[in-house]
Each structure stands twice: as structure tokens, then as C-alpha cells.
Length: 170
Image 1 (spheres, rainbow, N blue to C red):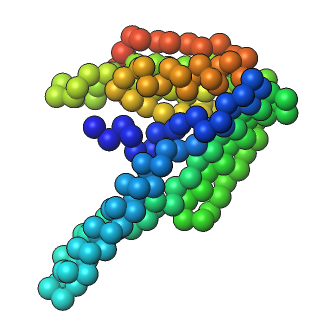
Image 2 (tube, rainbow, N blue to C red):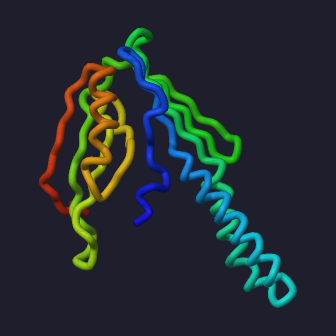
């Protein structure tokens, strides 16, 4: 239901470069949550501080969501994948050589419970060295395929599609 929050989109694409960023809907949802939570906290402030804390926490979560930024830039000419993530103004940056990337994978994950709507598809970049880089997830594989194809074309890595939903081993 909330697949659109935190989804990556292609900002720019060229023959040797692709830029990915979070969709605008993430920031919009965050600011709406800040406004609703802030209004609720203000309305309940005079009634009880404990009651005002619940919408205040929702507003705090909305602020985190509204200020969340994530950019992935794959540049074949530079031979790098640059990842930048920011939340509340705090940034983390990393550069990964493209030869460390093994494949772009779209895998089906089994639903956690029987009442769920079915498998979820997860897109990630599999690396030779280091942990996988999570890209996005969705209930429909079709929404992840253009993203994965763009990355596979620019980074010149394989595109792996695993449609068999497996239960997570604990």
C-alpha cells in the first residue's frame, strides 16, 4: 500500500551515466505527517502531555521522512557508483568502483504471513566485496524493472530476475 514512500526514480539517464534519487512523494508524505502530527500535538497539548506525545512522535517521524535524501550516481566514465544519503542534514557518502558490482538483482521474497497480499519484489545491487546495496521494493516487479535495466546497462553488469518466492531463513 505504501510502496510509493521511499521509492527510487531515475532522475537523469545517459549512455554512460544514470542518476537515481528518491521520489518527491517521500518528502511530500513527510511534510504532511509533520503538519498533521504538529497540529494534533498542539491540540492535545493543553489536555495532556502524554496524549500530545503520540502525534508529536508522528511529527518527528514525518520530519525524518521529509528531510530524507538518497542519491545513487552510476558513472561508467569515472568507473564509480556514488551513494549519498542525508537525513536531518547529516550526510553519508561512499564511492564504490564499478568492478566491485556483480549484478543487479530483482528477487521475490515470500510474504511474512498468510494474510499478506503475496510476495514482495526487492531490487538490489549485488557486490563482490561488501554487503548488497538495497535499491527499492514493490509488490509488482514491473515497477522495478526499468530501474534495474538502467543500472545494468550503465554499469555493464548482469540483470538477475529471481521470481521464486522463498521464505526467509531465521
